[in-house]
Image (cartoon, rainbow, N blue to C red; front, side, top):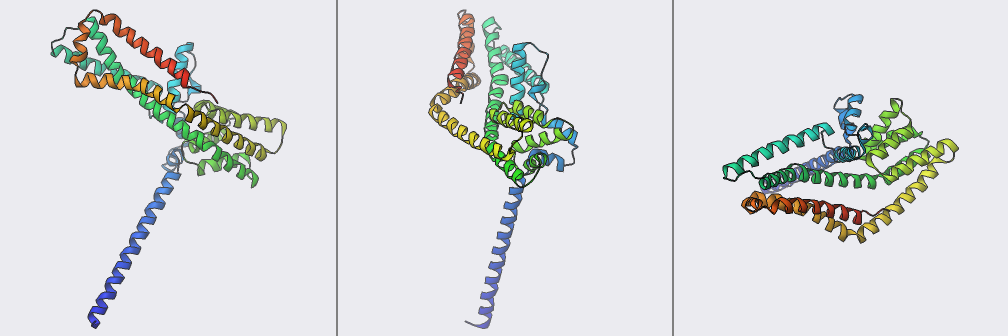
Length: 334
């Protein structure tokens, strides 16, 4: 091998080593950057973006279900459930905006299907009007609500999984000498969403003068979680009677983990029933809408029959009876 070939050989090795090291550095920097982005919760991102604290609090509490008052019992419970669902799913709409959006979408879709039915030559009889109302409501109300409900329950499950970890961090902060307020502030910077932003909201409310127990109780009501309620009770009892708070919360974390383990066993045993419930709830709606979109005559021709005026409303009522019955059967308390 000549001198030129030897120099060329070492030069190629140097270029290869340089490219390899540079690529490794870039991959590591990208991975670290993504890790840091994932570790920052929504509240901290908003504060880093220059948004003021009061606006951050207003944004995080946009759909606070504890603020809904002054309506009759059934309407109040239904709207409270919708607000909690929007909050847990982080839908960027208030309750009023969501209802207005749904109403506008319903009107647009209803007008569209009426025009298409009229162009196709169908007379707008009572049966066809009822059918078009049902299709429009299923497409603009039922399907979006089911999707938002699924996202909300998935995020609520994430909140339940994070809470014992948050208690461990809280206990370690207390054992290292931090006061309760500093321990909560630590959770706001170390925990991901949703619990990081929720404890951040608690910290902001305490800063603005709210009692710690009241702020934590409001968080428990927003998410409807018994684990947080037990945490609030433990904290309140300790403040009134004294005792080692770190030890109390450590025992509470153990109880919550054992309860979660039992809950997962119950869920595994009832998984078939819950899956059946989801299918029997969602599949008829999706099938109804998709079949109408693909072959509207399949329903429109039948809607002319006088028996349709009675049979179709009874079928819808029976569907809701089945959904309520299935939910009561698979909604197991632990």
